[in-house]
Length: 166
Image 1 (cartoon, rainbow, N blue to C red):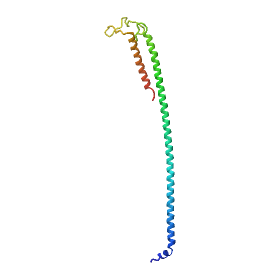
Image 2 (image 1 turned 90 degrees about the vertical axis):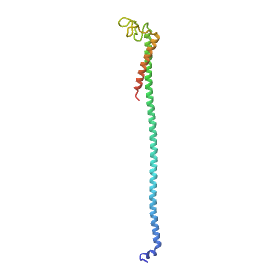
Image 3 (image 1 turned 30 degrees about the vertical axis):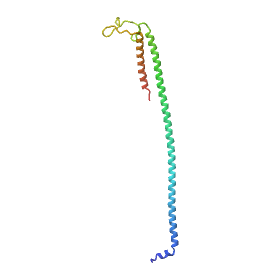
Image 4 (image 1 turned 90 degrees about the horizontal axis):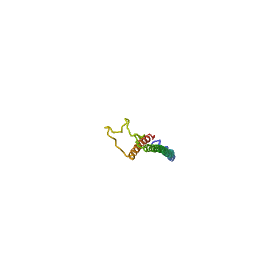
C-alpha cells in the first residue's frame, strides 16, 4: 500500500467529514448564488410589470387626449361649416328677395331689371339672326332667375366648405 494512504486510512472519518463540509459549503454558495439570481429576476420582473403598468397608463392617457383633441377639432369644423351654411343661406334669401322685388316691376327681367323693352339700339331685343326673342311667362323668368341665384350660391357654399381647414 502506498505511504500516502496510510495516514488517510487513519483519519478517514475526518477526511470524509471535511469533504462533506466542503461539498456543503460549495452547495451553500451555489444555493446562495441561485437565491441571488432568483431575487434579481423577481426584482427585474417587478420592474417590468411596473413599467408595463406605466406604459399602459401613458397609452390610455394618450388615447384619451387624442380623442378629446379629435372631438374638439370635429366640433370646430362643424361650427365653421354651420357658420358658412348660415351665411350663404342668409345671403341667398336676401338676394332672392331683391331679385323678386326687381322682377315684380312691370316689364323687368333679370337681364333688364329696369323694365325697358327696347334693346341698346332702340329696337326690340332679338336673337342672333334678328328674330324676336322667346317670350317667357313672368313666373318662368322668376323661377329661372331664382334657380340661377341658387346655383351661384351653391357654388359659393361648396368653395367655402372646401376652404375649411381640416
